[in-house]
Amino acid sequence: GENLAGVVLYQKDGKNDWYWNGVHCRSGYILIKKTKNIEDIPKDENDGSIVHGRVFKSVFGELPNNTVVCGGFARYKNEWKYNSYTCNAKNNGFTDGEKKMGDMEKECVEAAIQNWVRTKKQNWKLESPLYIHSSLNK
Image (spheres, helix red, strand yellow):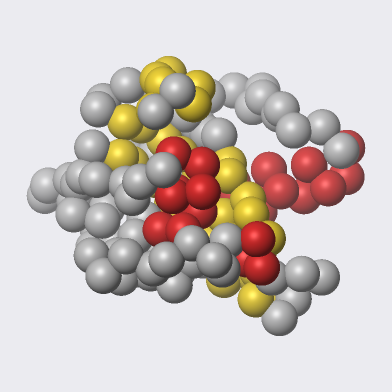
């Protein structure tokens, strides 16, 4: 398959349902781009990532700031990778500062993508709420 870059959105400015530069977003939305389609977007020197900043710029016209809570992943040479400085290591109070996506988050993203591939439907609702407990402040 083709190389892909993806971002799962959780919050912006503390909101679970928001508009960003005219684009409607909700918690759990996943953006996936073919990397060949975002190669022409200049890499920003303030962005430590290879692809995730370009995903943001392609959709929102700018890089995410610290008010955005998100996770980043990619498929490179047919292997899924769950690393992102732009998303997973963001200094926003919701991450552990590591570029690697957490295991529970990774499992949820994998399940959503598998469901999308299997059903060809982009919307998928959990049967029960998913709560992720953070112990970052302890």
